[in-house]
Image 1: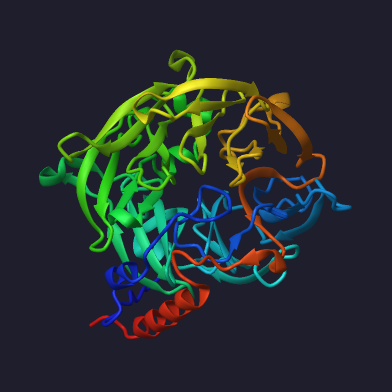
Image 2: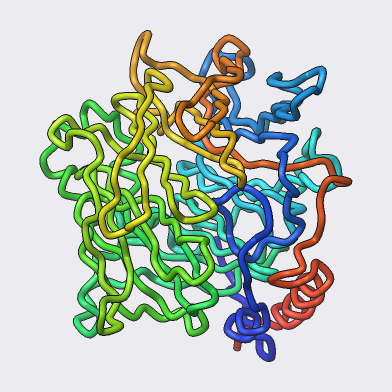
Length: 458
């Protein structure tokens, strides 16, 4: 596919970032881009689950499943809508646009990106666009969707050349046009090397910083897990680094050695904090990334998750709104753990509970009172037989115990494999955030930058 990468002359990414001062969000789930407007005031009403199709189960297609999670509703805890997109392409992660009206959802195998309208009628999302140009950038496996003002950063996992782990980030405008791309650094001595791998994105706008993490390429993540772990050469092909970027210039500043595939990145949301955490899948560690006493950014181990010799396989994490706690899901033992981050340099596990036969994603409400978990990791990595449980479970958290509120069995409902989750609310229950900017400000910047982006690069 011939790609035309567009550039914008007057309004650059740096200018847009600089124009959007950011303060802590007032409500919402905790693991989102800091540039989101239209924040949820307290209680989420709908939970959207990006779901992998299974041959012979229902229509066999990947789909967006909507569940009513508003207490007191007649359909509370029930599936109220499902929207199939056709085929199976390894449905994986999603991300809102900055105005929160649209949800971008990607597939790791066929590289399609689906854009759903979740703002007009959140209970019944509509597919409004399918983006087919990601592979045209030279990257494959669109994984993380991270909102910028009028833009979307999409982190790839692999490449078209050899389907290995070297990859990059693609910057889109909200219409789905490619603006530019940023290769992940590799072997850059000036910044400490780099392995070229990518996975997640985490931005701290107030410090003009972006962190990225690393995983593995298409050849590995599409391989059967049992076969993969027995392949010594394949097991060497996992990321072992994180990169600190200057956000406005989008230039890498430093590479940290973080062995064992560092995955999800979470910056502390507490005002004044200046650190982030990540969990490593293969070495079962929590790492903290923060400046040392001399102001130099460092990455160091903060805690061990379970028994690393048994490879519990930490996957998703969710930080509390006050930055004092971290939920960690471990896929192999089906546990959801809670770590006290009062001292982020030495995180301490204070709670654990088996929440499934296999668990992957974890999302909590902003007030910390509700925790949701889903079961699927990757189609070829999920467990087999009776252990291949495909569920969404909702729990209440009182600070001491997780108590299950409801469960949706995705196999019984003939839906497929439950993966990534996002919250929405009824339109009347939302309010535009007064900080970092009003919705009108975001829309104005988005429109202006989009108009500049229409000029082809010369």
